Image: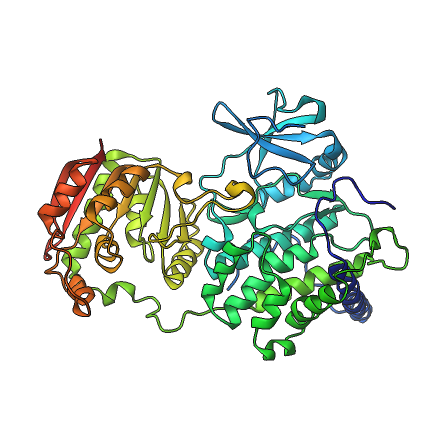
Length: 61
Length: 462
């Protein structure tokens, strides 16, 4: 892996480090949620529809 | 290499390409360095999906010769945006929607193997009433394991100002006018109440983020080259969703203003109000302007009379609560040709950024075919002491047709303004107003507004 010539933003050392720490923590959450979903599915719970296009209206309250 | 004259002055940071203008048409040159990414954007279906969802402006590939041919891969002609606005001119919900649109785009991009390589608030514009990305070259191929290169920029451009507006004061959006690359996180962290450290999103993305920046400020890390510092796809998605949840939870409700009751606090009778609406509507239909600026538009009642003629109407107001309410109306009614913006007419947006040419001043984005200045002249002439002749010159520089309301001293609103100060405005009379404005305008109509002492004029610049 090497720096792409198009990376014109300086991501910042501190921003990279903290992002990795937060992301690892949150990644665990995503993984847990995914496995919880498959556990529920195993026991016959209905799956929620894919959210991809339901959030096309980027609305806030 | 010297930049060609056609290149837009705000378009120089990203080596992927740049904007240039030729014969009044805006083009974007895509450089060879970006060829692979562009192909992926178009071939993966991401472009079509985003354009269909209104999250990215459309473009067509053009046969125009490039502005710098030795770098060029392609030239595209992007859809023209009706009015370029900046984050320091947006209300709370406008900035929030711009942030959510950015994250929404990032989530969709990830599903198709791409990622945003920047997250600048200046890349978002309001197109047909909705926040949309205008930079077609913001995408790069996603490489699993790499962190989000635009994370810091997202926090500075969106999260920090939104948190400050929500938790401290909505007027702190004006920090974006000082800091062109977003609010420094150490500053945001200092200004935010300590209680925000109990909010997981703000604790991590602002407070701890600021501490990490300070701690590693003089240390070089290159996680893109490291195998130990990796963010896998799940963690990456977790990060984007965390930012999204944090932004979604930020809210702002105007306090101290009569939410929704703006026009009940005026001295108008229903008859006067209706008469004004009717005149604005009739004159807009008669002159058929393509673009109207409503200067002092409040929550946009008269803006919408002008917009009903089909004009794209920008509604400027100094009150963040009024702009917020106006924008919420745009959203709830799905209006496509009204853009509410925050602007202090006594200190309008200046030209900003590198060489003062990256962000246009308010005036440089005009002139327009028609401007409305309703119930605003007394604020400028009396509260701000601007001589009538200077006001006439100001309006003449920004529009061709002017619909302006003169509010005389006998009016209770002007009486209020004069109650606490000496009347040093002997020329502020109807005759004085007409004389001053006749220097730059031809007065075509003047109508006494029913049930009031006010007069509405339709004027044309000379």
